[in-house]
Length: 171
Ligand SMILES: [Mg+2]
Image 1 (tube, protein in one colour):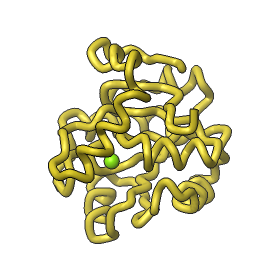
Image 2 (cartoon, helix red, strand yellow):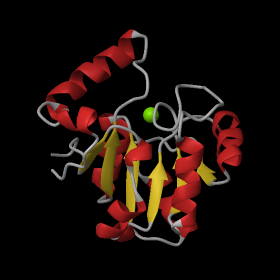
Image 3 (tube, protein in one colour):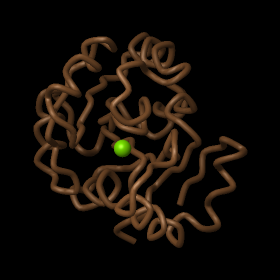
Image 4 (cartoon, protein in one colour):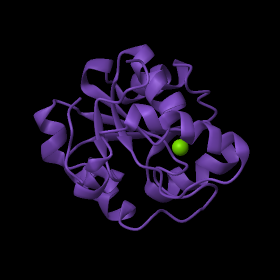
């Protein structure tokens, strides 16, 4: 299924170096909004800075690929000390391609991490990159987001148990 993620976790901080090594994932393409913090929040979510440090210590290459603007993405990426691709236009795939090229990785040793099935996960599936879906940090306002989240539900149904257990789920 083109919208279905390969793995589901409750948040990015659940991703461990051991998990990535097991699946031979050397680099992560990270979504920003509602994945690393809430929308347009300059402060990383709880545990994110420690998690980034842990990933770096393990030699995992990291890159933010966001659909948001440079003005939003640059200061946040700098705070985390990682490179970034703004205006990724996910589900289009050129942002992912650019990011992997910069990291010196291919789709076989990379995974995309994000909170939206119709942008992050769809784009990665089109490109053939493995996906780690993380539940959005905060529920969004507005009819557009409500509709998107409603449409996501059937895809995630039956897999949502991982939200509470935090266990990895291979689909
Ligand atoms: Mg997002």
